[in-house]
Amino acid sequence: MFPAGYQYHKVDSFKAACEALDALGGEAKLLAGGQTLIPMMKLRLLAPKHLVDMGGIRDGNRIEISEEILRIGALSSHASIAGAEVIKPFSLLRDCASGIADVQVRNMGTIGGSLAEADPCSCWPTALMALDARVVCVSSGAERTQTVAQLLKDAYTPNLEVGELITEVQIDRSNLEGMSTFVAFKRAAPAYPTASCALTVRFDGEQVQSAGMALGCVGLTPIRVPYLDEILVGNVLDQSLIDDIAALASEIAEPVSDNKGSEAYKRSLIRGLVARAFDIVMHRKNGKPHTETHSYYG
Image (tube, rainbow, N blue to C red; front, top):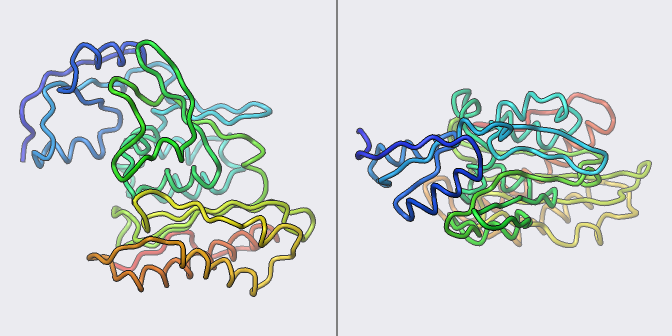
């Protein structure tokens, strides 16, 4: 099916994009990678009168790192993030970016568009919540920074004002230290996961120094797993601790039964993904090969 008619506007800066949104009002939609917007337009689920194309914004896809912060431009594609030299040391980001959908989507889809969509099953929100990431948001008259957790108000409901857009993702380098992974289980590569888990663990020798974990696809927004530090810090990871955390994750998950599986099935799946995430982290810590981060059952 073809989309309804619209007027096309191309901008060369985030400021110009904000000004265009202010001028065009609620009849306008931003176009970044278009991997969600265009299919919805073809199905006539969305019929904007105006499309504001941000693809030509200079430096909108920059990826750079300082001593304190990793900065990822909102227009960075999943593929460019997966292949960026500065991303190589950070397994969680690399796992997430390289496992999203298929080659076309990874080449065209953007991290900013993924966050702005606020899809409960999207991968980047889960990965970035585990890392306590922030987003820089701008409008024609202001700029503010908020955490990814604050951005994701509800399913498909980002905390963005009218005319406001995401320009950059920021992650403190201290949150990127240690061993990490992003694991997902889905029907096929192009599909959204049935469930996902992002895990990061910092070690002091064999003891855990800090940890962070978020669950995806099992709630209206990604779920940050609480009490990890209380359970893990100062201890050596063993199967008993991992089982306790898997049980906690399964308990706090909020899955619903749908065509991907029942609530009970998804809680069991979360247990397995948490165990897999810890297994991969420990294998990486010890410099050993590990299982794949993404599994398909279709």
